[in-house]
Length: 365
Image 1 (tube, rainbow, N blue to C red):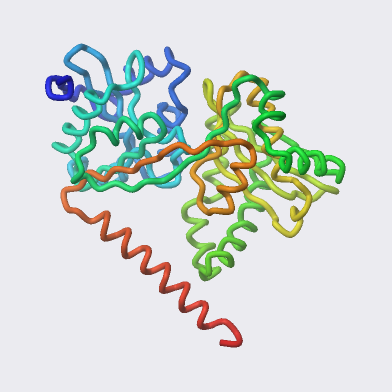
Image 2: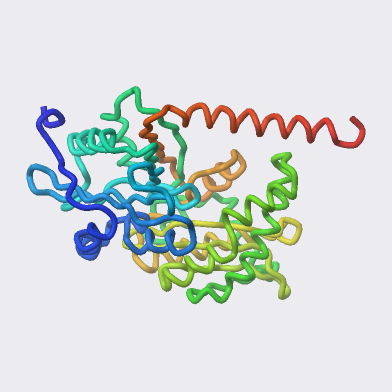
C-alpha cells in the first residue's frame, strides 16, 4: 500500500523553511491565504506566536509544508503548536498542508501524521477543512482526538448574474433591493481607514452576544478585547493591503453593519462581521453588504465566497439563504498527555454553570 511505503523526512523548521515556502506560494495562486507566509507573519505581528512551520520532503522528492506557530517564550520541544491558532482560521481555507504540485494524497497525509506524532511537543493542534478534512479523516488514527465543525461556502461559478438569479434566495434579493430603497449605501476600503468604524460596530456586537448567550457583559468585553482588539483588525488590514476589504453599510450618516473580506487567488473569505442590531433592524444592510462583496468577488474572477464556520443556527440559516453549501472542518490534537477532551468538557460545563447562575439571578426569579 502507498500509505505503508511512503515516507517523509523533516528538512527545516521556522525561518529555515521560508525560502521553499515562499517559492511554492509564489508559483501557485490556488494556495489559500491561511497557508501563506504573509498570514503567518500577520499572526506573529499581533499575537504571542512565532513561526514554527515545518518543511518535509517525501521520498519522491515532493515538498510538503505544514504552516505552524508556537507560543512565544516556550521551548520548541514543549510547544504548544497551533496550525493555525484559535481565532485565526479562515473557514473552509483553514490550515492543512501546502503540497508541491497539487493536493497531498492520503498516503502523504498519513506519513505526515506519523511524523507529527513522533515530535508533537506537549500538543500540536491542526485544523483542516473541505477536501483536506475528508482526506485526513480517511487516514487519521481513531485514537487521535478530534472535533468536527462546519463551514459554509458559496460557489461563484457562472458569474454574479448566475449567483444572483440561481443561488440567492428571493429573500436575499428582496432585502438587498429594499436596503437600497431605504437609503442604505455600502462603502468599501482597502487601506484600513474604516477599521475604527468596524471596531465600534464589533464592540456593539459583543454586548449583544453577551446577552444572547447569557454571559456576563464584563467578561465578554474582556475576552473580546483580549482576543479581537482593534489593533488585530488594523494589523490584518495593513499587512494584507488590497487583499483585505472593509465594507460598511451606512444610512443617514450612521454605520449599521460591517464586514471584513480577505482574498487570494480563487477565494474570497468573509473573515469578520459586526452590526448595531437596533440601527440595522429591518434595513437589509447585511444582505446588501454580502451582495456587494460577492459581486466584487465575481468581478475579480474568484470562484468561491467562504462564509466561514457558523457559530449559531441563526447564522447558519442566514448564510444558507445566499446559496452557501456546507463543508467539513476537523481539528486534530496531537498530545503527549490527553487533555484536550477534558478541557472541552470543562469548558462546556463552565458555560452551562454561568448560564444557570445568570438565569437564576434575573429579576422575578
